[in-house]
Picture 1 (cartoon, rainbow, N blue to C red):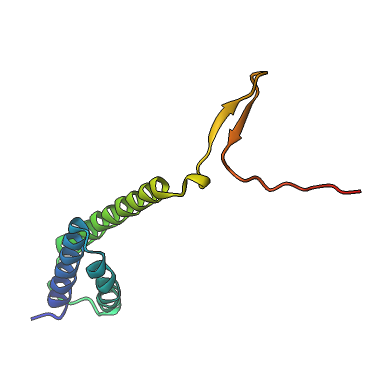
Picture 2 (cartoon, rainbow, N blue to C red):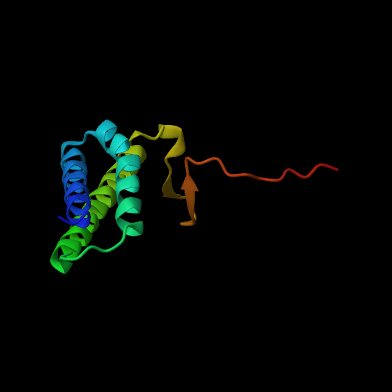
Length: 117
């Protein structure tokens, strides 16, 4: 039996676990799997190709990794959206208009230089 098949099976199982953890929002499990996945990837990358290694298995691994990458990107987008909603009111701003119709941003602190003589 080749050594590539067990490595590829291990990598597939790890990617499945990562995907499941991402879908469940288990960030602790995602964090723990990161180094394990990195090690498994390096082992697969630097291992010698074995006879009988199937290209379809490698394509499936690539697709699973891309899928998890999309899940991670969506998770990060969700965090950014939540962070924007939870930002303190003092950090939020909006555009207002004065009596002459000029627009200006209201609610944010702007750095300014004060000139003194």
